[in-house]
Amino acid sequence: MRRFILIAAVAALFVSPMSPAALASSDAEHPKEVEWHHSGPFGTFDRAAVQRGLQVYREVCSSCHGLKYIAFRNLLEIGLSEDQVKTIAAEYTVMDGPNDDGEMFEREGKLFDYMPAPFANEKEARASNNGSMPPDLSLMVKARKGGENYLYSLLTGYMEEPDGVTMAEGMAYNAYFHGHQIAMTPPIDDETVEYADGTKNSKEQIAHDVVSFLAWTAEPTLEARKRLGVKVILYLIVLTLVLYGVKRKVWAKLH
Image (cartoon, rainbow, N blue to C red; front, side, top):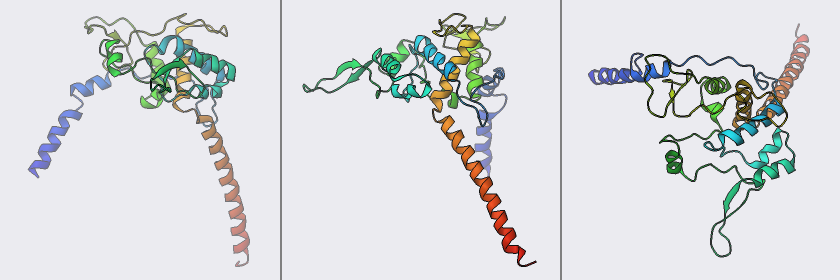
C-alpha cells in the first residue's frame, strides 16, 4: 500500500496543474474559430482553396517541411490536370537506382513518386534550423489538438513579445503556441505569395488556404468517407422501415 501511495505521489508531480510542464501547456490562447468548407457531415474540399494552399506550400513551406505521405499523382484529386501535375513533379529531383552500373542517380520526379523531403536526413534538417527539427506536414492537421483552427491560429498568431517576457535566442513569440516561444519564424505575411488566380493575398487568406491544403493531405479520402456514411445511413433508414413493416405484418396475426 505504501509503495502504491509513493508511486501515485511521484506521478502527481508530473501531472500537477502547478508543474512547469502543465503551465507551459495551458498558457496558449484558445484557437480561433474558423469556418471550413470541408467541415460538417456534408462538407467538401474547396478545390480552389486547396490548389492555392498547394502553391503556398511549394513557395513557402516546402523549404523546411516535407509531405512524405503524398505522391504527385494524389494531386490529381484536387482538380489539377495530369499535365499540370507532371510539370510540378518534373520540378523536383528524385534519387533513383541502382542503374546497370550499380550506382544511384538523380532524375526528374514522376507521377508515381512521393514528394521528396527538403533534407536528406534529420541531422541536416536540424543543422539548417538551429537545432530544431521541422515536422512533416502530411498529417499535421490530425496530429495537433484543434486541427485546422489551431494551425490557422498559429500561422496568424505571431506578435511582439509582451513587456517582461524574455525570448530565447532564435525564438519567435506566438500567442497560440504552448509556452509562446516557437523556433519557426513567421512564415507568412500579406503578399507572401502572388496567387495565380488573382485571389487577394492577405495573411489570413494565405493561412486559410494552406491549412485547407493540409486538411486534404491529412485525409484525402474525407469526401469519399462522407459519401459512404450518407449511403450507410440511408440504407439503415430503409432497412429499419422494412423491418418495422415486417414486424407489423407478423404480429398483426396475433392480435
